[in-house]
Length: 356
Image (cartoon, rainbow, N blue to C red):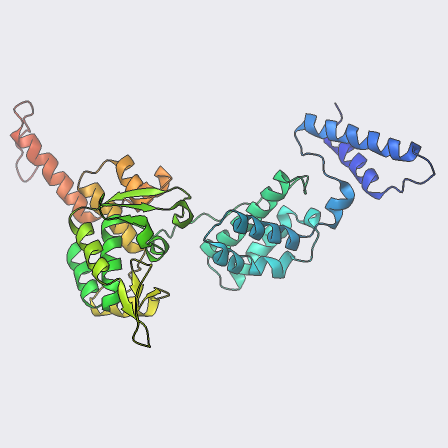
């Protein structure tokens, strides 16, 4: 078997050599060389065969365009976020050849972004997009290999959640058009985008269920949500609010369950921030309602698998990260455990003096 260094030399020759002459002999020799290199690369597991002349012209900018195309073709709702994430990558690498991208250059990019004041989590999202673009090019056989891209360790996971009383105070300070959507999020743990895109076509009031379509679900899977108790009351209120009047006085039915004057709810971060400040819980995010829902389900004893079906968590590791436990939970757990031990006839705790 050829050493990797030798294969790389062959690849360089194939990329650089002019295959002159007339007739088909030179063309056949080149094809033979390419076939041999492809076979050897497969044997070493070092990479796979890509047309050298095509690969040599491929830029990082084109890889990022391919990633955006993949997002569009698959109907990913985070396309707008992706375009924002790849902006710094285009500026740093966009005109460069993809084959010239090295792990060292990526590390220098990380250092420059840190020096510019950007958080490690922000840089990680950018690098994850770059890594996805490179992996996609490998799958499409546009690229033969990719550099190793390592991400920063993140230790800034949010632990925010709202107790029922605090949540009630926030809702009381929200404008009316946001109150039901916030209550829906607090019960279900659905993401903001999933709530904003929910339509009446997804609601079966006769069967008392909601079916979130896969194109509106972030994890790409449809989700069934039974309507009981508070959820059914929320949907009943929204049903009454579905009739809206246009500026000309004409009435129409709004397609969205949660809306603002008949239009899909847009960005409401400023309104949300003011409501949280007024309720005495500043810095609380709307996404903290998702964490709160997971925590509430855990405290209620809901099975993790069932809870994940409701919230739409696809990964157990992510779900566990949202399953926040605070000091009060720990105290309650210890108190319940010790009470159980005291009541048990099978366990007798030794009595100790205060000085022990």
